[in-house]
Amino acid sequence: MTYTASDGALRQTLLRLDGKGYKAYKDIGGSYRFPDFVLAIDSVQADPFASPSRLRVIVPPAVAALPARLYANASRAVGISCFLARAFARQARQLFSRRGTGKSGEIQIEAPGQQVMANTAVQIHMDGTVEARFTVGLPAQGRRVLGRQAAILLTENVPQIITSSLYAHSHRADDLWRHAATNEDADALRAMLADRGLIAFVADGARLPRASGVDDQPLNTESVIPFQSPDSLKLAYDLPHAGTVSGMGIPAGVTLIVGGGYHGKSTLLRAIERGVYNHRPDDGREQVVSAGDLVKIRAEDGRSVSGVDISSFIDHLPLGQSTHHFSSGNASGSTSQAAAIVEALEAGASGLLIDEDTAAANFMLRDARMQALVPKDREPITPFIDRVRQLWSQHGISTILVIGGSGDYLDVADTVVAMETFRPHDVTARARAVASAHPSGRATEENSPFAAYLLRRPQPRSINPSKGRREVNIRTRGVHTIQFGSETLNLSAVEQIVAWAQTRAIGAALEYARRQYMDGRRPLATILDLVLSDVGRGGLDALDSRRTGDFAHFRRHELAAALNRLRTLKTFGCQ
Image: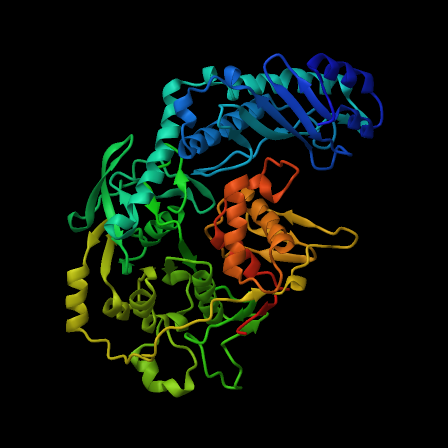
């Protein structure tokens, strides 16, 4: 901020600029003191068709008047910040009217979706100050300043949005408290899982189905069947605000989710997959929580793999290629799934989530007939069925699998949940009886211990964010695409990225990790530790000094997944 002037001065400047060339808007950069808040114009767009101008508003505690209990801890503050960001976005949509060419008149904020996570759009500081970051398309006709419209936009419309969204008096007190309490309850519930030996919990009454495959809002129809735990898996927790909550606990180990098609198997797994994040009130999944280090794994034909030790899954290739430091620019389904598992372990995953529908069939299982037709000495793949118990018994890595057709997995399961018309049933005893009565006839194909080298070291020069004359060129397109330098990162198979703001933060974190910590000596896991430690201390602003409002919390696993899919990535292996 270059200076602090009054809101009147801002209005007069805008009126003076009316009709001038668009670049004259640069004169309004700085900060302005309004009666109740400070408005900072951090970046002014150079063109009406360019990225909109970046603004911040700082509302002092006495004006925002949020009761102290709403931000008494981080859980509550994050719940409230997401609530306020959604309110700001709603008010901005209601006030929006086109004021000229390009992005003229747009007021936008990065509002969170169904998930609740720390973000830079709205932050509540320890003293109760509310800071919101948003963008504004400064009005233009052609490439001429529309100063009068801009004055109305910035000195009337923006204050109206601020007053009706960021101040406590604009909301019902019980609505504010519910968002704080719901988020704190979810964090408390997740923290209790390990004490009961669980990796996930699905509350009774949860409404798991979503509106559609591209709409993460809850499906609100009379046909939705609320979740009800089978008695044998039912547990109860006492939460700080919701009181006693009962539901199905999924124990650590190997769990199968079975059942007929369209009975809710994948719906349950997707809820568990998203349970690594908290959810907003009325989402239906507010009390569906998972251990924070569960990672969804799937096959991904064509992805790149760099120096991954997949030898415990794939070895003795026909042409003698080593798989202890395996690289490929076009991995097959089975190879990509093997690599994804080892990469998840390298990043510190405590459990794996796999849906048979999105897995490579030859990686998951070789049945008795195929074993007889193609002997093991001619098959380099050791199927997952022969490693899944070792991952648990030797390394403490749990797995939850959706299985619809591979009954051989009954032999390796600790727990079996059958979904019937969206209702879960504990059929573990029955599954064991079936397995005993109907032997699969297949032979275990590998008895050696599961082992993988998990200390790859990224080569700094292989990670290049530059393009042309730009030293750093990082852009995101939607939730699952990052333009990193000259490379396009496809993250469509990284299913636990749920928000565009996460993708933006991951892109920035890749460059931050390269700049700060990649020296060719540090292992990837150590680099992840250091980046997440910096974010923990300094917030997401640690990644970008421009104080952008479009970052959201991400896990180390999605950051690692993005790096691992960078086609230029090269790694050092064993020393």
